[in-house]
Image (cartoon, rainbow, N blue to C red; front, side, top):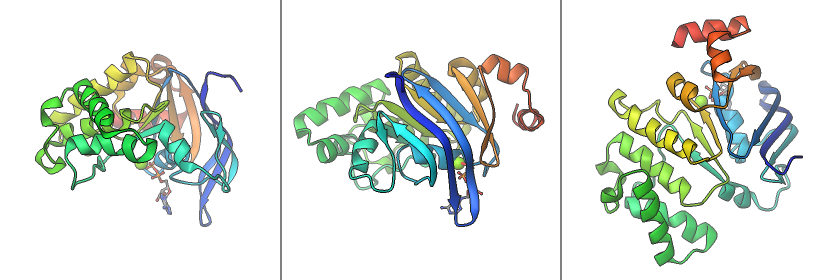
Length: 245
Ligand code: ADP
Ligand code: MG
């Protein structure tokens, strides 16, 4: 495996009971790459990226993340999660903690960072997502777009090797989508390795190195954004694009 490889999935398969949700998935994510995954609801997009930080377990094939092979007998799943940031559709902030504490607890509890240093890092990343002034508020006092930017800052505080995004703008009111996409675009410009499940095709065109289309648990097609959007090869991809564009 190339030293630049952050995630390598080889012939990955997964079942929920008797239902096969992932079928022979092969995907390599290299350092600095921006991958967009799209596809119809239920096609397995969330399940796939949740396998990358071991929120879900796969049953066949291999997944190697930052050099660590994911398997049932792993001793230290936390070591993988430390390296893999994840941003969810519904933000998943800790409601009983301030914005600042939301950003401090990961480094403090998981990495053993001292509170003064965690605070400094948290403020730096809240600045990075342009909401340092909200640091002492609670999540419920923030707009959806602000909450999602806190969720991004919170992940960044762990200094992950890769960031996974699972439809980060789908739960937002329309007027808040762009502020989150701008934050993601700026991360991409800074060279962050990113795997984004999103149907924001403007973002995909502007930022993605590769767009991957999933259907029924399979990667049906992948290509550079320009080729993918202007000249999709598969009938299923064409239908999907005609529905969302
Ligand atoms: P997507 O993110 O593309 O919408 P998901 O990965 O969430 O797709 O789901 C893929 C399929 O797996 C769907 O049919 C969904 O109903 C099913 N599924 C997802 N999570 C579970 C689960 N925990 N148990 C059983 N089936 C699940
Ligand atoms: Mg999903």
